[in-house]
Image 1: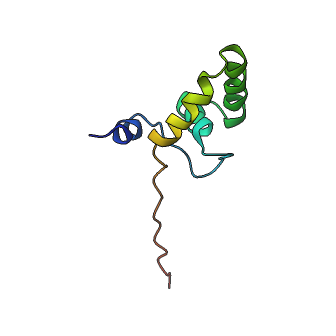
Image 2: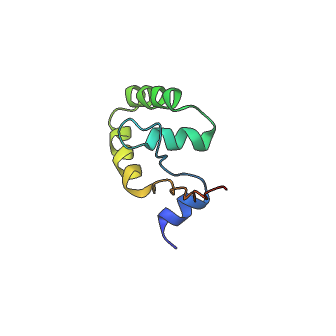
Length: 79
């Protein structure tokens, strides 16, 4: 089992909509029940309080967090 599988089971995925850069803040916000913009604001506050660490954490999460699975819809013609 990979880290990406573990993240997916926990609901920590990068959504396909609402991304600004890679969707990390949007995915973390969704997992915590927050909108993307407050999550981005908290990320910036964290950057001011603990300089440097979020800059390291963001790319690591970008690599480890899987993309949200695509939804396959079938268009069934109606008579």
